[in-house]
Image 1 (cartoon, one colour):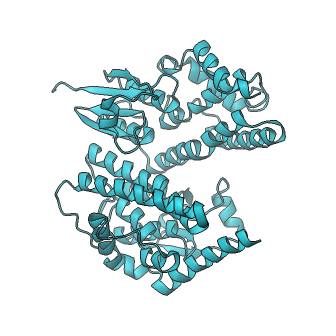
Image 2 (cartoon, each protein chain N blue to C red):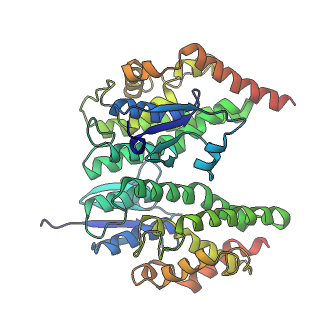
Image 3 (cartoon, rainbow over the protein chains, first blue to last red):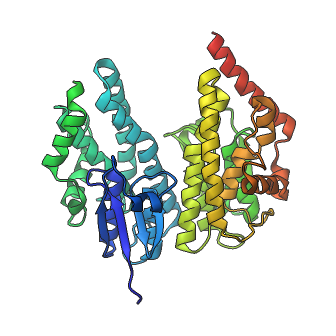
Length: 219
Length: 231
C-alpha cells in the first residue's frame, strides 16, 4: 500500500477536534497532529480551510476535508474496517439525525447556560435537560449509541463531556447527574472508561482551569 | 404496493425543505403518497412521527419515520441504490459535496432568511453577508467542478443541487419582493448558470410551486416582518 500521509489540525480543548482523534484512533490510522493557536492561525490552516478558517481540518495525502461530521463520514468511507456508522440505512439516518441535534440544538444550549444567570439560566438548564432526556430515548438499554461498541453518535455526543466540565467549573452539579439522567450518566461513565475514547478527552485539571477562566468570572 | 414498502411524505406545499425530498424521490423514481400537514394545527400523527422537532418533512418508509431533510436525502440515496445517485461514490468528492451542502445550509440559508425577516440596518448587514457567502460559494463551485461542466437535467441532480435549488429556485420571487438580486450572472456566473439550469429541469418544473405563488409566500413573510416591527 502507498504511504498514507494524514494530518489533523485541531485544538486540545475543542470537542469537534477531539471527535476526529477518536475516529482516527478507532480505525488505527497513523496521523500527525498539529495544535493550532486560534488567535494566530497558521498559514497551513488558512491554506487548507480558506472558507471558514476553522479547525478541525483533516489532510489526507494533501487533500483537505473540513467540518467534523463531514470528516467523520470521510474517515469511515476511506478506512472501512471498524465502521463507526452502522450498515443499515435507517440506523445510519438515526445516527445522523441525533448528531445533527447535538450540533444544532444541544451545543448552542450548552453555550447559553454558561453565560446565563438566575432565572434565564434555569430556563436554559430545563431546556438542555429535556434535550438530554430525548437522547436517553435514543440510547435506551444500549451500552453505547453505536451498540456494543462506540459509534458515530457516541463520538458526536462527546460535547456532553464539555457540559460536565463546565458544570463543575461553575460550581454546579444539577445539570447532568446520576439522579436526573441515570441512563445518560451511565453511558458517560462507560464512554470515559473506553480505552480509545479516554485518550481523546482534554486533561481534566487543565480543562477545568480553562473553563473557570472563561465562564467562572461572570458569576 | 406492499404495506412495508410504502413511502409516505408528510409535508406542506410551501416548504423548500419538503421540496428537497420530493425532488429526490422523483429523481429516484420512487412512488410516494403525499400528506399535506397543517402546521398551525399539527396532526397527532406528525407529533408522533417527529416528537423532537414537530416539523416537516417527515418520510415514512417501512412504517418508520425519518426526519430532517438532509438526513432524509441521504437515507433515500442509501436505500434506493438503483437509478441516479445523489452523492458521488468517491469519499473525497463526497466530502466536498457534504462540506458545501453544510455551507449552504448553515452560512447562506440562515442569512437569506435574515434578509427576509429583517429591515433597515440589520437587513443591509444580512444582505452584505449573503453576498460574501455567495462569493465563497462561487469559488467553491469552481473547485468542485474543476473545469468539468456540471450538467443539470432532471436526472442527475445531486444533494448540493437539490439544496441550492430549494434556496435559490425562488430567486426571481426573492428579487421581486426583496428588491435585491442574489443570483447575479455578472457577479456569480457559475452559480447563476447552475441555478438557471436546475430551475429548467423537468423534475423541478413539475413540482413548482409557480412564480406567482412563490411571490405570494415571500410577500407574506415580508409583511409579517414589517407588521411585527411596527407593532
